[in-house]
Amino acid sequence: MAAAITYEHIKTCKQSGARLGRVHTPHGVIETPTFMPVGTLATVKTMSPEELKAMDAQIILSNTYHLFLRPGHDIIKEAGGLHKFMNWDRPILTDSGGFQVFSLAEMRKITEEGVNFRSHLNGDKLFISPEVAMEIQNALGSDIMMAFDECPPYPAEYDYVKKSTERTSRWAERCLKSHARPHDQGLFAIVQGGMYEDLRRQSARDLTSMDFPGYAIGGLSVGESKQLMYEVLDYTVPLLPDNKPRYLMGVGSPDALLEGSIRGVDMFDCVLPTRIARNGTTMTSQGRLVVRNAQYARDFGPLDPECDCYTCRHYSRAYLRHLIKSDETFGLRLTTYHNLHFLLNLMRNVRQSIMEDRLLDFRDEFFEKYGLHDN
Ligand SMILES: Nc1nc(=O)c2cc3nc(NCCN4CCCCC4)[nH]c3cc2[nH]1
Ligand SMILES: [Zn+2]
Image (tube, rainbow, N blue to C red; front, side):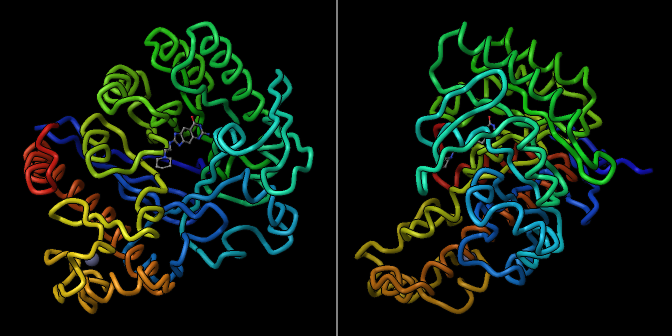
């Protein structure tokens, strides 16, 4: 039976070493490098599935931890799975809860068995382990599942990261063993190791020896500088098999998407575009633009003159500012629509630049316009 998730390499950019590919999943094909909008609670906040398709979102991300707490994976399973529950018939990737337990839950206690914690919603005593994380993701029916891992805090002592990374490798093996449907849902392992090259090497060696259909790079975008993140990518990405997808977790600023693609990363996700949109901060071809600022009160031009999205074709900066200042939900929808369209369009341009062997030139041109001269 065909493997659930397969990676098809199309070409490598002669100028940058970035790669163009396709990830084949039970719910369709993803062209890479790709950005995945985040739909934590089974919705990409304020967007409908039709709007996400209109901007060509090819895959979205949701969260095991959040859906476990509310509404509960049993309800979603009874609804026929997450695709049916949220009316999304394209690929879904679910994060395993490792990161969220540590960043959201209270009173968490980690043991070899798993993590005991209290719900950040109502204080209920809960427990997630590799086996529970797999039970939840199998109930959700996502196309790509993530192994249950610990994302060490940053900074963290070498010994702590070493013990944590070795436990994450043991947990990954337990996930593989307890995966109910390996042939029609793919399970990605998550490489850890903090900012320590030898621990990254050990983690990659452990996990690639278990032959997962795809590999994520975890433990980054946790407060370290972008330069340090790129340094870790420089030596970690080459440790991963080149015939499998590579997913950098939690990364979604335009510069990091470009630098990550150049280093051979295929998949990215981040709440950034949707989160900043809700306070009126937008990403435009001329850089960040905080449309709620007074300077736009009488600016009747489009948010981004170079953008052809629904928001930029029909509404002015003055109107967007008015809606955001008035806490009008439609304003959040319009800024979210534009920010997601902006990043999805950026990734389309990245793929086109790889096709034309000019991704470094594209990066330099983008940085010049976007105002990232220091990179
Ligand atoms: N299972 C799992 N393992 C990770 O190591 C991990 C590492 C991550 N690092 C991030 N960074 C998210 C940073 N984000 C930037 C915009 C504002 C909110 C936080 N998300 C992550 C998610 C992750 N999920
Ligand atoms: Zn736009």
